[in-house]
Image (cartoon, rainbow, N blue to C red; front, side, top):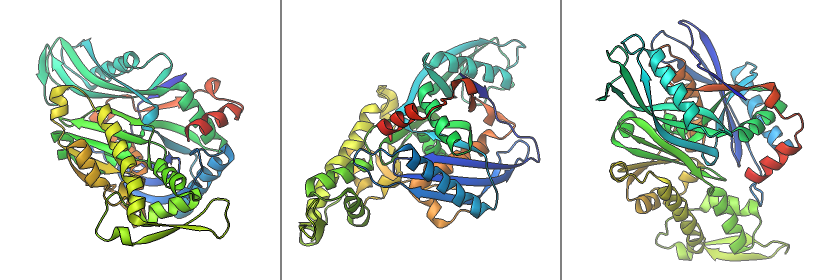
Length: 428
């Protein structure tokens, strides 16, 4: 089973935080250094960055030994850059594995004055209610508070009352998902200290406070799936994912033009776009043919883009169907931020605006002090967000609200990797 731990740091603590984002096309690791300053979040500096590109596969799957190589390589590169060794990492959980539920909890205020302990108790109780029996709670995030039935738009700590009513978003994941991820990490000689919802982490890295306040949907386009996080009135109100991503575009190109997956990925990366421009029908790309050495197929860029565009439209349409259907909430969403490796395709933002009927922008990680410029690309948003999350939850004040961390007990760990390999093959 899973144990919940609130991570707080004492004043003056010097901390090392390591984050690991295990994706279908790459593994990324960030190492950060920081010191807590009392009631402000941990001030961090990225001191190590490592990543390992995963070979393109027909089913988006990779053997366990290949994933292990990817993790070890990414961590080793980050350690060499940081000049330090790590043995604990914060790990992201892809949006397609998340289970969310919005609930309300009423709690009697024992002392007549709302304290942080009251809020933590309400969130912990809500996390237990919101999480299905076969899932573990990752986060219990407040949406709104009421004291004696009156809605409070500010922090309720210090207010007088009898009953504290808390509306919250509970985010969880299946025990099997966390156990298999943990077993893979432990195989690499590391310990998982915390699991964090990947869309939530990406949002922490890329969104500004005004966007969260006015209403925004963050869309993180990965290789195997696309995650999303919805904010309104400054609070996270929904997150999840769909099982379609940039890797499906690669497979579409490979199937339609009869070319190897590796070449299809290169064409997508170098020439790919989701927008047909003037003259593209007269610019050609050669595709080596499967099983026919020396034989090539020539197609125009416009032909390639006509393959990419429908799949990109499908990704955003699937996300749109997942957005909250509450009329008032949905009408308040006027902005989208797209991030992840798939967001770099030319024209992706325009398709997002058309499919979602929202103004959109490209989201890059912010506040990654010390990191090389390449680590500020959208594909590293989740990893940067994991570091930002650790900094925010490391303060001694209201950042401790909610259930942030957990450690897996040894009795739930898998001693054999056969089941893990089958699980990873089916999902990565």
